[in-house]
Length: 434
Image (cartoon, rainbow, N blue to C red; front, side, top):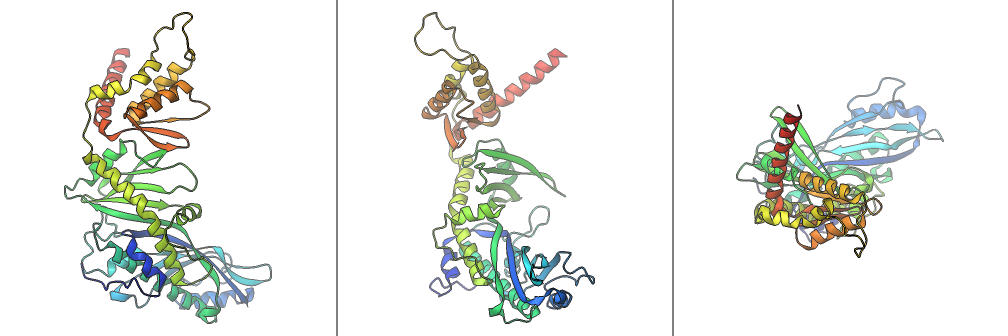
């Protein structure tokens, strides 16, 4: 991999002082765009669209009469990217007339700079493509990723400033007089972890069977490509502003761990945790856009560190035996099959519905390694049993609202063995019934 110039962390540009602190990279990112063109009446829409096409901002000039009725597809090639790089900004401009009959690029407009492929184009040896042929990667995580992020941010600044300059020229205004704003709507921040054993897909399959920290919801879906079906595991806290955590095999030797921010709400929530002050997204400056993305990258580092630790748990924990696992389940087993209660015995009796709910919790725990409780629907004795199992070291708390307990990693092999045995018993029962 070719050495790129080191970034000067003491430079006056604030984005460069942020970048070296984050060893992550940006994959997909989408900006919202809103630009006022108060000097252009609606009658000049056709000419403005022609100039946008001539500037290379949109792919084609709309047919006559369609400029204010259709979205304008953006495909802007950034000129003069350092190191011979090539970057394209995709998206769509939504041009409309406001109530005063003046043109505006409305806030439904979108810009998607292709940052990771631009970075890949600047490297002498960016590594093999992903399984399925995708090129949104630059190889395994390493010490140089802080500098690679810096170059992504520099490319972003160059690209936004170049597009805004062409946009201002099409609007027949100096760049400094173009008024509008640009803000991050969606973002994916990632690390690609190396796996010398070339078993990244096996790791994902193992993660799919485990209760994972940092999430109340866990979903598993296939990735379809010419190599066949592969898995991606997604988990998150279940709240509207929580980021989505993802893990999947990018290549047999690369496990991608990713923080996905699918909405503006999730972007704002992560920015609120950033250690560096965030500039206001109130202008069309490439420097501001890059500084905001740098803050997002910094804020994502602890989340990706937690995911790294989750993957390491697959290898670092010492498996506990099945006997310890069964003994740890005793508080739940006692509720699922309670002993007959003697007449006049002290203490509160177990409710009629509690054994059935305890059995359901036991089944869920054996099947998925996790069990959720709610204040209203979960009997107090059942919650007490799960808390007792947590204190005894069988369970750990994955999430608090709602409360989600998960099996500790050292008991995972015993759980999977018991689950497999139960599935064989179910098939035998089905055969006997038929």
